[in-house]
Image 1: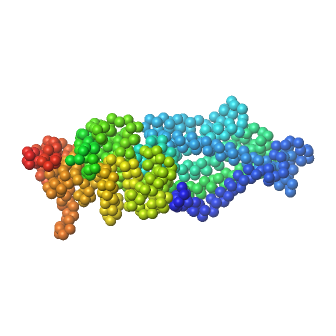
Image 2: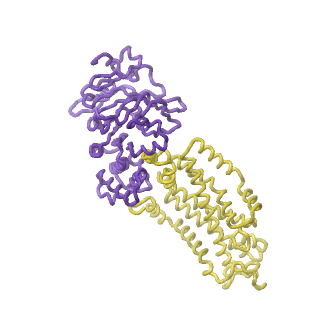
Image 3: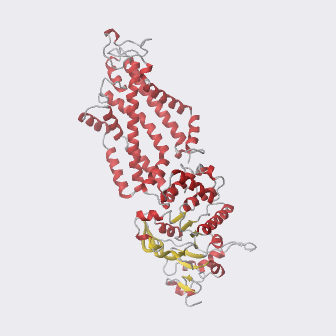
Length: 285
Length: 325
């Protein structure tokens, strides 16, 4: 959309005034930049095992601001490279779950009747399966990989979005602009894609942002259990796990990746809350 | 009488609700000629809008259902068309303008985009061509500075402007019939007159028929050639507009006209029709209007048929039985 002050630009003005939300947005941006430009930020190799024994479990110093782990690898370097895993997996998983969830919710809400009933019962059934066990089973059955973890997180996280979108569509379904579009001869699919989903987009984006934080936590838990991304690829959850045995002697090995998880989740939640306050139409009615 | 464009034959539309079956449209028949303007008049809840939605086949099913009857448009029965064929009729051959111009526009797209989309639904035009057509339509409905207004969002426009945009969308494919469902009711009085004037002009220049649904008899007197009066889901009177205002044939029509305020008439209270429209869930036995009618007599216990009167008029009242004929 080119001209005019749209809902988007009005929302952006509100968003910019919200300091916490802006802080969250800046933090998320920095995290992504750090992940993308990781090789430029640190001279060390995140996966190499070929360090001298005396390099192991070094406390924070000028050479290694966050210390080294049991193989002598720089913790800061591994956190920065680990951000790649956490951010990529969470972003793609949420994108997948939003896609699945909004399409299912939109089709269910627009069609109504038997289609709605069947789709929503499927959602109910999937929601009643304990997610962690489902994921553990799948990871045990197939070989561990970044792709598998992403798909699993995405495929188990879309039901909430489906319900949210369905509710939105149900209330939009009876609005006059939908009748007007039908009266002009528009097809059902066109009405869903052109008229219904764009009107729920703000709500979808807000819920997706809030969900990214949750997915990062689940991914960290999986890695902590040794079921996430296979080593030696650094991931935050696994780093916390690896430092667990030496927590008293070398606290930095677990603490800093743990802090990274907290900072990221908080940043995403601040961003999501800010987006909701600025863009969610339900807040102004 | 112009050539027939639309003929509705004993149309029955019902709504199945938890409280029972509501007979919203109960055996309605009337015609609209090519290029003709027919007013469809009645109180709220008398079935005017349901008739309009039935013609477009936009009754939500469930709970609604077109139970029986036929709707012939240029000789084709719309009720026998497939949904796909019906979509080609909607917006292309028959268009509708709704009452509420704010909520009839999608808030997240510009007005111009929405007109462009209406055009693209039925005509294979390139992006630039359809955009130019949309600007042309904005100019046609007298929106000042149409190139600039193309990029305006609905919330940036006044009610009258938005209704003009709705009209532009409805007329973008040059329909043969426009159904205007209370097109001016939600607008300021001064804007109402402009919209009605615009519709009349466009009707003449585009040679289309209009089915004008309203409860405002002044609008009907201004625009329509013929009037169909509905009461409780049925047609109670049909008449050319002049004769209707000169001598209403049905007591309900007379009651409607008496309740219009007139200048210079020093009445303390306007006369009104006592009671309310009967609940479509339980229509009264006999004449539907009998319990509110000042002229009721014993024959009203049986529902009267539509009597043919001279001058192409019809009335559903026993008082007209045998008289004037």
